[in-house]
Image (cartoon, rainbow over all chains, first blue to last red; front, side, top):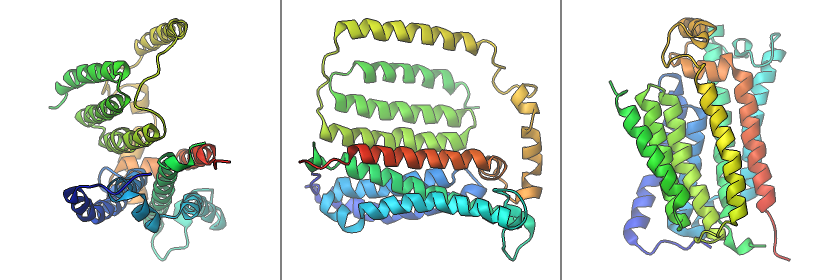
Length: 145
Length: 175
């Protein structure tokens, strides 16, 4: 069982840092088209934000915000977002994972741009949920067999 | 410009790796392993692979370290002594594998060679057409998510199934 950290400095700092980390993760996700970053890095960062929360504010604060079955569902949903974007390419009359035929009111080139954004979002959700899921189980010292 | 740093960083990684393997306190080993991952990410960024450096920094130095720490919570900080027979077995495996790795380094093209096979195959097309075809200036992203979308899909499935597998293994209720 991870207890809330004793130091008020640590707790306050983490409380202030968490929203910044989450916003930065979103930035890394959407800025992946222009600079280093993308879905995977954003997902790990988002997951790390929740792990930081558990380490500093304790397991109770963590469990109030994070639900394990929901994490499992989110991880699957992330993969599903990717697959659905791919299948939409077939539905649009082209091949699997061809984003240029996605039903969007933009040019085919821009549709590929948005297709990349969709699948990166799926990757980010899947990765973040998977990391939080693993941490949930690993850090649950009460469940020692 | 930053390339002269690479040998220094590689030497640092060697020291960190030895410390991580030799440390009796596993907490020290985990932290040093995190430093190893971070130094690796510095190497990637020094040679211009910023996307890889990013991934290495968040996974190798960040998430990996935290997951190891969480694993320490469930086990012990003390290293259990290794039977000496197992040591010899480990050496017998590591030496041939290391020798094979050193042998396959030789035929690799020199780093940054513009005439090497991977640099003349499909990469030039990706680099020149990424803006016209996907409106994405970062070619790494367009290759990862569009041109090589299948690979990334399978990678995501691997991460998901590895995560669920680990979760199921650890999901034991005390009787």
